[in-house]
Image (cartoon, rainbow over all chains, first blue to last red; front, side, top):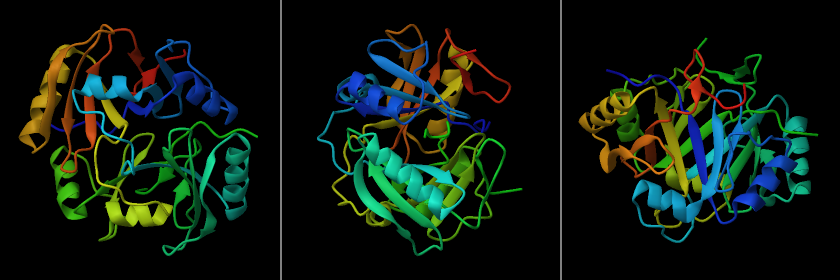
Length: 143
Length: 143
């Protein structure tokens, strides 16, 4: 057996689903009609983002809802130029994102910055000059 | 402006990149040739999974590497039946995953279980009878 090569859903535990939904809507993403008051689904190309109360998410997984800290998880939104990184980063801040690391050249040869959503979930905005993207904007690592 | 509807990379901070890579390879996923000793890339359909040292990830984002706890993030792998959930869950445990919640019927009408990877990153294996999947296995929320 082997797992099919996909991730169906990324669920972010949040304090206030409505607040988080409004944030991602300001970024330009659309709440799916499948959403309910308790959970928001945002259908992206290739994966769905869900926003769900952090406490409920912990309960669903049967784990303890410890105090938030560094989650150990980052989500990256890659674009095709350094200017594009600057533009997305600036736009995200204008939508209420918290600045975490202003875009800069990084050791691996790319250019990236980080912002946080209302709950501190970390988003990297990155340009990687070594990796191509397909028509949908997904990274092509293995041609 | 609005963000394109995609997430390029999901990066999991891990204690030991080689150990985590071996775990995901046992699940049947393939390490990309773009990987390096310090970072593993696994190209999935629609998103790329990266494995990177937790401390390095925190440094890259300019945040403090607090002690791991509930990350507030879960990744879901949806399949098309309850039996499929059981099979993937059992298979994951045979690959060294830690059982977190054995599959069971859940309040929203589906069926799901959770396992953890070597660093405690939570994976849900789920069957949602209300949502269809496309040919690539991605959820179709808004037709």
